[in-house]
Image (cartoon, rainbow, N blue to C red):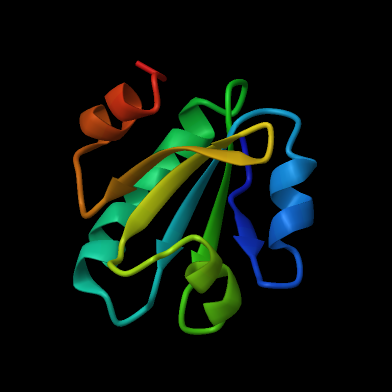
Length: 106
């Protein structure tokens, strides 16, 4: 079972670079309704695909520098990083099947 990492401006670059596998990062905020819908889906993906990906979450209100660095204008935004670099960006709430397909985990 994989643990979802809580990322911050201070830890983001190191956590993503040292992940060892591709990493899915959920950019969210607690006041965001669609973010609250997506959160449990991302948690399930973390548990079910722990052998393929790491998963982290970054609160954009508490960590604006990282959100700005990656051009986060809308939340939820979920980004797949490979080898520390952005590989795929999905904006908005989606189904679990959509995320699995987008991130090639299905």
